[in-house]
Length: 237
Image (cartoon, rainbow, N blue to C red; front, top):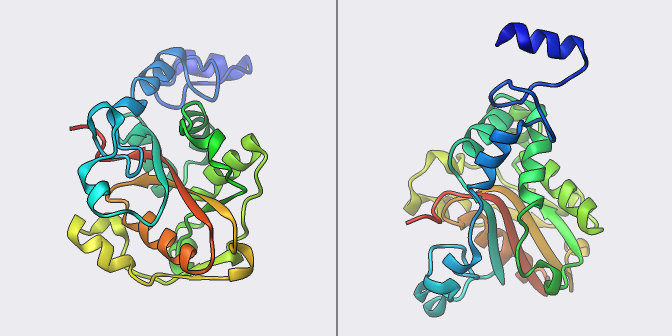
């Protein structure tokens, strides 16, 4: 395998980022691309408001009882291997080569409501200054940039929103996450007033971060907030 990979590099051919076979497009071979496509979410099996499992794509009981601060939430894939492995490598090992196939995975399965939502700008869910310095980048920036470019939408600058430093959401239990992000965001109102904003993030788990940021945006004058995550950890039953 290593000899074949070496010869492919000598000939100018690229290896698949996952299995090191011959890459076809976006840094992946045909087999790995097919594995990833099998992780796509199904609009007929999830609640259109929160993205959780729901029969026949109906609004779930939770959303009927307690309306959410955003209009819609969509995730393109389930947070399972190999998508989860790719995200881990990108976020925690700074393997920037993963960005292109991750963006492709997201854009190939967009929200069914996106074209009719009337969104006029995109906002990457921000990291705190400390987290950004530690990691060296915000993993959601590249995804938001790809979405903006694909749909011809402006991406709001980092100065549009400030995030206070808290413990990473991934280290907390589900019931602790909403408390952890409460009052975490401070906005520059000039960027959001009367706008329909599409929030973009890499992973949605409980949706607490989306909820808190959407709530803050609405208080600042945003007319509507929609959410799009690359992956969701709790869509499958």
